[in-house]
Length: 283
Image 1 (cartoon, rainbow, N blue to C red):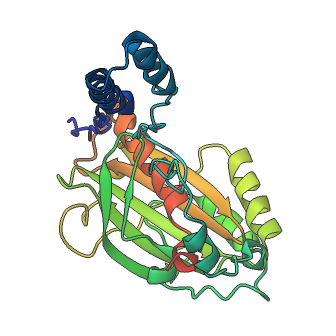
Image 2 (tube, rainbow, N blue to C red):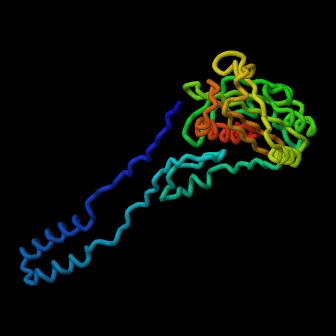
Image 3 (cartoon, helix red, strand yellow):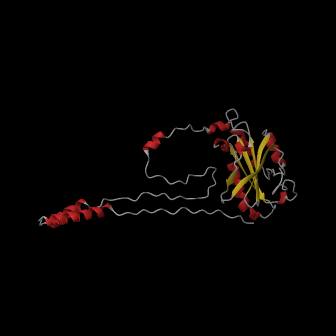
């Protein structure tokens, strides 16, 4: 099954045209020469040369144009694609109010982090993966950390060891519903704990994060399906300040074809980076 890839082309550059100012000046000089000749000036060639020298065109440069590139990005924050202005309005710069930048270090510890442990604060409404496929949030909830369907026993042991109690969960699907992405966001005492748990998961073989499914609709039957253990899945995790984000993506038909990872891999990776406390900071 193949998903369409979003293709974007950069806008065409706008050209500029205009007659050079020396054309008008030369015309004026010719008129004056004709008048001088009428009044008896004999050395008209010298007069014409004089005006020609004073009206020679100055060197001009074409305004700088910055082309806009729409490169697919795997980072959590899209880069600005707006062209730079060639002139700066000093008045508007001076009048622009100064805003206080958010101190992201406050997200590193429970004592300073004011992010609500809710869907709106931790889950984006949509995200787009590196293949240009957009995924939309179709279901969400809050559950015990170790209650995910098909979670491996070693994963449950790790979550219990690090005192994980609750997960904000979300499900995403693309427009054609071919893939389901299950996201779990967990909060810990501090950033060090989240990172240590992520590292421990990385050292554990054949770990399965488990999934949470929508209560109805496409993908709702995957949690109880006996075919899920054989399905091809893609898993990514991200330690984000004091939060750990786990993302699992798979085809809703539970195919075991390894080629499906070409699409589920980018989906899970993008989801693990899109979810997290930055959704509350940016609101």
